[in-house]
Amino acid sequence: MKYRAALKSLLAVICALAFSSEAIADPPQPAAAMGYTINSFSSTFTTSTVDLGATKQPGFQWYNWDLYGYHTDPSFVQINSDGSLTLLGNINGSIVSAVRVPGAPNNFVGTSIGGGAYVEAELKFDPRQVAAAGTGPKADWPAFWALPIEGNFIPDGNQWIGQPPGYKHNIEVDVLEFMRLAPGTPPNAYSASMHDWYGIYKTTCAPAGFCQGGMPYKTGLRIVPVGTDFTQYHRYGFAWRPATPTTPGYAKFFFDRNQVGPTTQWTLLGDQPPPPVNQPWEWGIIDREHLWLILSTGLNQPVTIRHVDVWQASTASNIVN
Image (cartoon, rainbow, N blue to C red):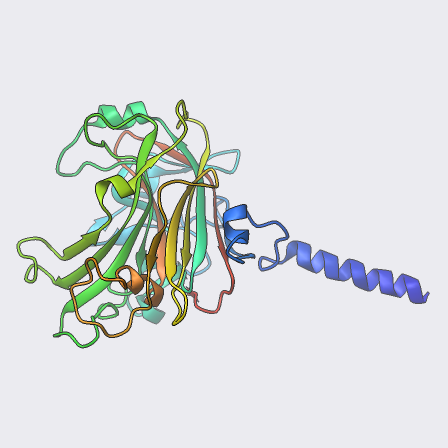
């Protein structure tokens, strides 16, 4: 009886671990290498996880884009019988892990990620449709990216400390952008980059919106194996480790869980004055912010997503409403 009771206790622990969202045994290698073993966001696509009715109610993993005067048409979001989701194309974002809701805590509902993470989406699209869509003032393309709640949902959350009112500072992370690249770019390439936005809107760097510290073009160009078929599923990943007083922070980009392009590093951001460009602490603003995830595409450029996952060392810095 004693051994049977012990066995039951052991089985109970195993079952609890098996079904816990914070104790998955086998994180992908890029996450495991960072010690990020908590699967803090694991998303497939059902009517319970996608807010197809645009209700903006808590409890969903994905919502329709609603920011900067643009609203995604929910009819452009299609859940498939195999559990995948297809974005049929709409400008300025299609589905997001958090949506603006004035009056809600921090003015949003959904999930935002802080404190470092390995973020990954498994998706497919047809480059020929991207090329056929052409260019124009409202042109868009298949993309998996992230913005901070600071400055987007929290109006003054991205105020640069020690600078005049309205002087902003925030990050943008583009894990995948399959845009129409420069002539001569090989077909086995896509863009993955970060942007450090700062300044007083349409003032510091007038007439542009904000000043930008961006990765050089060649740094953001990610070259994958020759013959890669983008119409088949591939995994696009981003690893973010925050800086500490003694160790640099870094960002790495991944294709099918193999790093593509160089590692970007930064030192701990304090109250240094602008500009951030070419400073050792450039990109450090990401460590102070909370990212919401975005899956989007352009008109007549369907993208099908099978899964999105986030792995972290801790969920303590996330904000979920």
